[in-house]
Image 1 (spheres, rainbow, N blue to C red):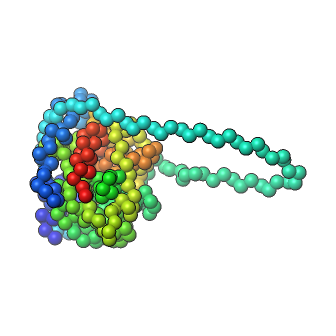
Image 2: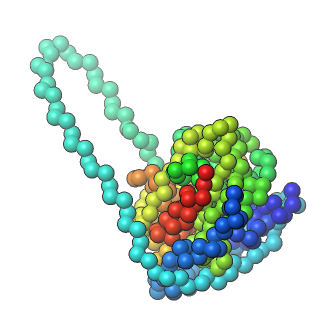
Image 3: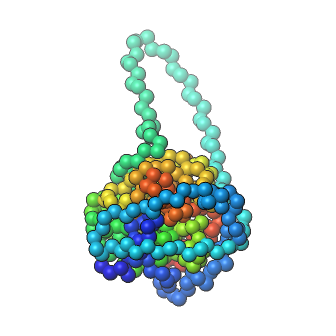
Length: 347
């Protein structure tokens, strides 16, 4: 495998990188490129908000996240991200209104109490398992984790994955979400949802298109470190028909509780941690979950309240310079515009 087939490693890259292709993707079936749509994407204020600037300035200069020991084919050449360019402001999209609460049905009139001695009532079973917040473990193999998978360069093999992605709902039913720094061109990239220990239980899906903002692809704006990918059908089916999808969530509270998934490069099992996020800066959220090392970039923040994906590991320090703290760019009108562009070019 050549370096041109995999994204380049950066010391601060949460994706276990192997040769990022610098050019913006030429979309399949046409010559339209995202560079021609700069106006639609650059929607952040011209300068960082004071809170963001202060937070970034105050952040300790942690050592870059070390990548695990790798075979000679894995590139380890660092590549500095370009300085973000100023962009115009926009009014954030309003969050979707919550569904109305159904009116409960009236209780039926109880029958007369029997004279016989009643049987003991079994103890009530909890509807959900208790969750230890901020604790990381292996994600169970269930319907939720099936929507999350690992990105590979070429063949699906043990130790060959470099980033994480997840399926998001779309009209074409073929859309993934990952970090912008994970992939800039399809190349030989494939996606294996629900991947575990060398097995791809839901098949291997070829990446066909990559959609990133010009703010990220041209200026390295960490507030726009996200990308959508399309994948080709497999056996006549779209990926969403096989594993389902999470809806994209916009303008979610900075203090939302989420399930955080990710595939570390040092393991072939997905991690899961549940915790509340906090506001790091105006356009960055933060979460404390241990052991999210290189390879977890692109892992989704799935809201425990709505089931929507409201962030991905990326953004500030391309996801974080330490294994125990992760970041995400805030999902607002910027990613909504990119989503609209992606679904308009699918199919």
